Image (cartoon, rainbow, N blue to C red; front, top):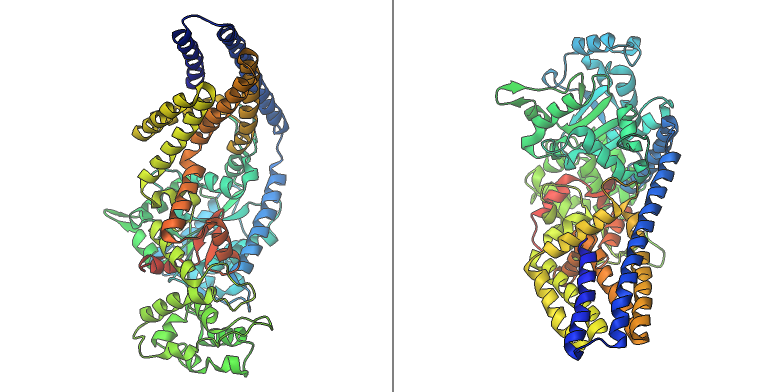
Length: 631
């Protein structure tokens, strides 16, 4: 209503100004007044037609979605998950030079349900146990295994198919989850749930239920699931239909990455949200999980779950990995590791630091140079003997050195795909991002606006407001009016956000985002057409009334004002992101194309990983290290 009122008042104001200026109405002014009513009628009928078209489109979509085959949807999701994690494995170099055979044992008895309880629960479930009882081990100790056996552990050995994977930082919990996901995808039947890996770090169990959070994550990672699934008073999408039917198997990584005060709350929320027969996997640091089980006045466990704990890498496994990545044993590049290999499996600082997959990955990236094009003369790589230096008195010192050397190694210019960004620019950008993220690992684009002073956003919007309204007024009513009205509009925008908020509400109401099957992207795709067509119609009416020049000016003014109104509707999202990106590039030296930088850091440098739609640092410990650095 606000936009309509503004236009009506503007039309009558124009007439009043003409009367004051001339004392009576000329033929032109009379035509202007007479043209106002047809224009208003045309706008009403245009709006009615647009609303009718939207209703028809929603009805068509609903009819197409009336009958949904969830088996087919689940199969399509399984294919998408498989493709996604095959690509992510390649980016993370999980199988290069070969998969590390991570081993595990049963976790201590106090962090899991007693084994007889698990057996009893599975046997008592309606319809019988999910697996084959003859394959269950006699006790929890029988869960010990390594590498590819994780699929057997989950499907055949755990009676309830509920598992907690524990380990120290960098022990390989995420890698084990990916292997389990791949195993389930390859062996599942069409009626079984689809495994989906979620990063728990973005969940706030005090503000959002688990199922609501899972639904949001699925919609963001797999937009096709936003399609309507059922009809009724409220339309459900495919995401909700799959969750309600139990067709999603959640693999929840990073329970320890939640705020510590929420750990116990999160476990309790998992127990309350998921039915007893819902298969589930949770990964967490061993010490964090043990602390989460107790809270003032009580204790909580994940209902019906067994637990395993990942073990440090065996000495021979770690040595073979480093040598193979260097080209194989008994060659000069592999022999560079001899001093380090002699300390593997010991309590020395380097022996402890390289006892995890994360430590080995960092070391091989830094000290094993990748093949170079024949035309490139690269400097010699640093020698791994420096890891044995007495300057590193403990494991933490070695870890710090590896984190510090990782970014320069990833962005060295002497590689097959040289980076567009220098080592310093990359490092400074990662430090800034880590400091912005604080304890949250997800590098979401909408967090960037919070990293700059908020008055910058208000200033930019005020200037844009003033230019648009000043130009519109100048074109329609003359330069003097534009010069006066532009600064006034900018001042009004700077002093308060009420007008722009009202415009946003107006646009939202016009397009019914709250209950429409149209996505925001589809609505925004219609905006240019609405503005241009409206401007042409308005210009024709004004042209008939006042001549060609007035018609053109009025059309341009209409498009400017309506374009600004629709632009303000997105000011809290893309517009704020564009402002923040520009400000950080100018003031802090970050890349102008930040999204391209992040994509390159994930796909070609291995500094970032991707979970769902969000980028994250390769490991939370790398993020925490960078957050403590100075730019």
